[in-house]
Image 1: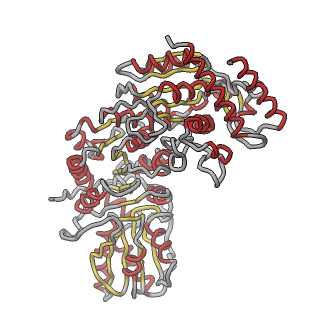
Image 2: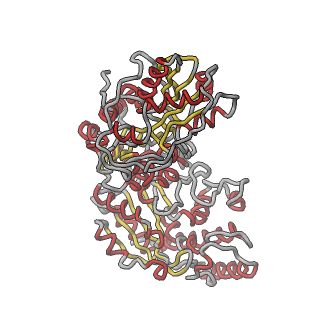
Image 3: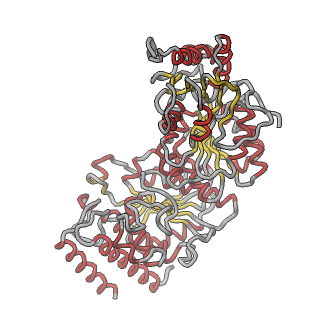
Length: 280
Length: 323
């Protein structure tokens, strides 16, 4: 249903965001590469195709909102905001320094384009629910997108919010679970197994869509369905690979939050270049 | 405006008033609306009331989202849950972005006398004062509650309001203008200053009478804005006295006593005694007065503290924890 040109454009944008991640981290700077790169396609689809979002007017009260509940992976959002021109590109090199505006976790106070303060895990869906309720009261067209991690689903507050959102029948709220199967200290199933994620959301009253989170056309189809679903919230459970696009980091908890060596940086660059050639 | 003698009823009525004045006021409760009296708002404005179930953390962060969407949310629970259960949400989702969320901590202090320590809040003021950007309020009676609420539409940033469950004596002077930060003098006296908040204001007025009978003139001040504390007004209030007593229905660590000492460190000042709960949790009791007396929160204790200072024996000998 989505034309191939759009899919291609968004695949290239996801790749560009991964280039930006490399740009941000360089050699030796610690950052959350794994969980940022697993979301590249999702972020590309939201910011560059789906969301009502005018980068020339990023405070438009009718804009859609993107909330990163898994706030530690904000590097990928910074990349998108830099591509949109909302954050000056020069800021990317100053991430997590007193000289720059890009904090270690999302902070709307410091960073243009960030919509809330998130990163203490489990809170984003609740904040999104509040926004969605407020927009509904004011009959605004804004939709709210909340991206959560799978490890984050251990937080009880997520399920409090899941219950409440279904009870209030909000349909302008869409959750995305970045199901990358790896958290800070190892594979998610070994830390605290959370089986039947899709069935859990369904049992809480949500519309559930299972997709491949790296397949742009599946992402677009799911987001489109979510927009059309009335009377209840939708969650997109996106099967992803932590560290996607960087072979040495894929499925590797060591790259949850770490720095690249010079060799890894060169390897990453050449892998992304190969992908660029393939997408040409 | 006829204030209700019951503080939570006065609170609920004032909330409805705010709902009338401003269409952006919304209210959320965690299944305690009948106790907190947010139920009055629910009856008046059902479309602007959100029953959040027994889930305080989600309630607090949902309020953050509503504030981002331009609403002025008032969230409700018992003080112990509103501040403790949802502390991280207040901190990260509300205080860091400095959102206009109002947190009503109802049945505060020991005022839920029957339910015991799990439901009584002895540390809520400490927690809320420690949060950067949080305003901390504790009205003395129904009238001050209403006046305070009236300021909460425009007051910037988050605010915590500590609401007592009981009927309290009406002490706020009827014609006295009010602003957040105000320290109200309820009795003049040049020998000692009794600085009190909440239910201890009435008890401090009684203490001043006990002291007057001994020829000691004590001024009594209602401090209902615990943060930001008006240090200049405080310093004016204690100018020239020989003894300062701070009385509060709260743990001795981090409450009004701590706030006063933080402010007074800027000047040479007379000895300060604190009448407060000595670092322990509450207990179930048959009535409010019984539990206050059990923890030494009495007019006599306030008067004795002043006398100890004035007699030069201000070491709190013989005090012990009551469990």
